[in-house]
Image (cartoon, rainbow, N blue to C red; front, side, top):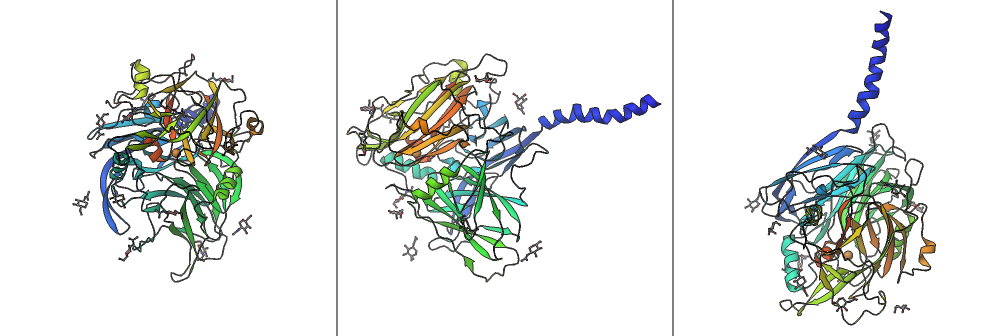
Length: 558
Ligand SMILES: *[C@@H]1O[C@H](CO)[C@@H](O)[C@H](O)[C@H]1NC(C)=O
Ligand SMILES: *[C@@H]1O[C@H](CO)[C@@H](O)[C@H](O)[C@H]1NC(C)=O
Ligand SMILES: *[C@@H]1O[C@H](CO)[C@@H](O)[C@H](O)[C@H]1NC(C)=O
Ligand SMILES: *[C@@H]1O[C@H](CO)[C@@H](O)[C@H](O)[C@H]1NC(C)=O
Ligand SMILES: *[C@@H]1O[C@H](CO)[C@@H](O)[C@H](O)[C@H]1NC(C)=O
Ligand SMILES: *[C@@H]1O[C@H](CO)[C@@H](O)[C@H](O)[C@H]1NC(C)=O
Ligand SMILES: *[C@@H]1O[C@H](CO)[C@@H](O)[C@H](O)[C@H]1NC(C)=O
Ligand SMILES: *[C@@H]1O[C@H](CO)[C@@H](O)[C@H](O)[C@H]1NC(C)=O
Ligand SMILES: *[C@@H]1O[C@H](CO)[C@@H](O)[C@H](O)[C@H]1NC(C)=O
Ligand SMILES: *[C@@H]1O[C@H](CO)[C@@H](O)[C@H](O)[C@H]1NC(C)=O
Ligand SMILES: *[C@@H]1O[C@H](CO)[C@@H](O)[C@H](O)[C@H]1NC(C)=O
Ligand SMILES: *[C@@H]1O[C@H](CO)[C@@H](O)[C@H](O)[C@H]1NC(C)=O
Ligand SMILES: [Cu+2]
């Protein structure tokens, strides 16, 4: 009897310690993404767009850190489709990363593909988006990664949270916009409006209702802000309120207060908003940043924060919009970003470097007999304009198919010049499908150097498969002797997409501990189309968990 009582008491404990941790580690989240056409009315006109499940923005993918996520994507439209889980590390699961012709062939009309990945060592907000042509203009949505069960946020628990997806809207079909630009060899038409959660708000000749965030006095909201625009870095503000930034790109930051968020395409920012002002209505504004001669969509999109109990007729508090060329606002925001670097969330910055790379990034001009001026604008990294292969690079690497890419991507500009001074007279680039090879677990320091060719421009540059630390940045040319002395190797911000300042440079560091083929490109879609892209090939390691997993059986074929 006594023995049995003992076992009755201990069994639940055993059940807890043996069964619970296992089940907690292996929660599966299943999603189905039906890619379908839908008519949407924006700017007082109706247009048919590609969507996921009919939604714009698309559905939010919720999961916890350590969860296994299974998304079945079924293509019901006439375009090729792929989905990229922007910022998800995809440790050994490059097959689920998504960029067309880099890690997979597109999901063709009528076909489907199951993305299967585990969220490891990340928590916060990311985004998913189509990664073929310009489809991501309408095919995008939020990824919310909650902390593991029982693990609190490292900041006061908000009363509620809200996803804020910023986007761009064209009255025309977006594929027609880029196809026309490519035919002419000219920059594409800018968008007709920005949007907040799919709402453009009031625009010229169209009194559309904007997005509204309802708040209760005294409560704090975690805003999960995502820039899903194609070609524009944006400012985000709320009248009369400061925001406290606590996380970017699914890594925690040291909290800091700001009245303006600066956010590039592909980036995410979590910020706390406290409804501590007089009850009323306050404008939310998203507007473009551009500090050089390049054209932008100048429409500021607006929404409203509305305190509960506010009368419909009460006036709305406006906010001052940063000027389009407000470089100091961007600098002060970027300089405030620091990784949390706590005991629980350390910043493991590589301190010794195996590969020290300098990548010049910008545009060029190549001959084109059929184009408007007999030339076309292209873009390049180290003078290589990347040409998309017709076989995905990851398959070519995994199966040893030769002739798809070469491994001679230059680690330095082949012909150094004064990148931020007078450009060379010959603006031509070379074509190539080249990768840069990295040994497993090697360390990389990569300096992005913007060029002045045609015009200097800020490039929000994105690396797939890794987070990196932003150890330094500056204006002018990178100085390899003096600038590294000023690097922050203690608490640099950790992210997956970084803005390289106009006419300047940014230095990042990362450890190549994820085997596979990883795309790196400017997240201004126009620059990606023009060729500002390349890939790193990270070799397998020797250990049991250091190789690419075998490809899934439903991997699309080209
Ligand atoms: C969209 O609208 C057009 C024209 O109004 C109509 O012909 C078409 O069937 C609609 N498509 C969908 C998917 O609703
Ligand atoms: C997902 O991938 C894991 C690891 O490769 C595999 O064991 C599992 O069967 C896959 N699940 C699905 C639904 O494909
Ligand atoms: C781009 O803009 C030009 C000038 O406004 C216009 O004529 C053209 O139709 C636009 N292209 C597309 C695809 O909308
Ligand atoms: C708004 O409408 C007016 C009058 O019809 C027209 O002149 C103007 O060009 C329109 N503006 C835009 C941005 O469409
Ligand atoms: C926002 O922060 C600034 C600088 O700290 C301060 O001057 C301002 O009063 C704050 N505004 C609000 C609404 O808290
Ligand atoms: C946007 O504003 C800039 C600076 O004010 C201006 O040079 C540019 O022509 C505007 N672009 C459009 C499309 O109106
Ligand atoms: C807002 O809602 C809260 C809780 O529902 C309530 O306590 C408060 O009085 C409301 N405030 C106003 C201004 O209606
Ligand atoms: C590069 O050009 C800039 C702008 O003209 C000039 O200030 C700088 O001195 C030049 N640097 C070198 C190394 O020549
Ligand atoms: C880029 O490559 C082209 C073609 O080989 C060459 O003419 C040009 O001088 C190179 N430019 C630079 C900056 O390396
Ligand atoms: C470079 O590649 C593009 C296609 O991506 C092609 O149109 C162009 O002719 C190529 N240029 C050269 C010099 O091979
Ligand atoms: C990678 O290298 C670091 C530093 O040498 C080492 O601490 C770590 O264990 C290595 N990781 C793997 C997976 O080999
Ligand atoms: C879709 O992808 C397939 C496979 O790569 C390709 O052959 C086809 O041309 C693509 N279709 C379009 C419309 O781009
Ligand atoms: Cu760019």
